[in-house]
Image (tube, rainbow, N blue to C red; front, side, top):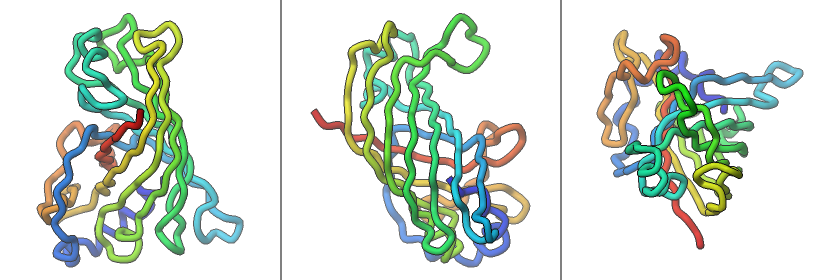
Length: 214
């Protein structure tokens, strides 16, 4: 998704640009973290040809991909979600297409590790806009798109279908002093919590909101 490649530049420039971000209220249905990314460059070495990323996190109970009856059946207060995405923002515009699949997961036999049983999958397409990070040194981006979801056969969500739109805000980690931090919509800078690192590395954070269509 071409997010981590701009973190170093942000670390050098972002403290002087924090006031450029206008306040905006944002309430998310779920919070995900980018735990891996692989970028292929064009043959001339300028710009990217493709990018693949994996994100994981939790979405709230009572939302389109995590109905309350599912969390009741799981004995949980939220759903674990994993996303595989391809595409990303072009270096010349900061904007580009993205597509992939989201998976809602449940625990399977081993409560000591992360959920691994797929109970719902959702194909999605959308557009990623990282132009604030690319051209204004603001560690933030947005994503908008559509999804179509269905419960996995023989799972507790078998027969469940839903589709709709989603939108999200990327918060890209940057060094504020010597502390990896996120920039919030109201201009505050907050350090990453301990669970916002992946194997010791700061992770981009994605706050997603879903709407549904009957």
